[in-house]
Length: 166
Image 1 (spheres, rainbow, N blue to C red):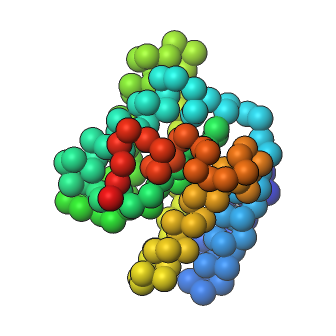
Image 2 (image 1 turned 135 degrees about the vertical axis):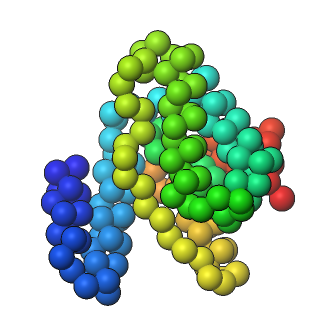
């Protein structure tokens, strides 16, 4: 993670086109680290996964976002949504704040310590082709991490939850 922090600090003084390439490298590096990490792999444990799914559904119901696809991995999540009544930064901060508060209340092991990392990475989709690419990427995350052979077997994705997006 020190490598990622160093790369992130380098972004501050770069032109946008150069910063975008470094952001992509950071994202790929972070994904590889997350997939092989054993640290805090509790997101799929009960009641944490249920709290996250409840938060996703709640924000969809309140038109904060329209969820397209999501996956909860053991130590990170991917959300693909269209912003509704709030902007992206507000929606992510609210989601993190609400879920962390609930998890801290219901899971004594987390009480008093930060639950989510401050950073988050966004990608924009501007076409139906990119939408499909992002959906495939999210669905294949558990496969790429070696957790299942077929994404449909991973029960912590929008495709396998009681709450289904269209």
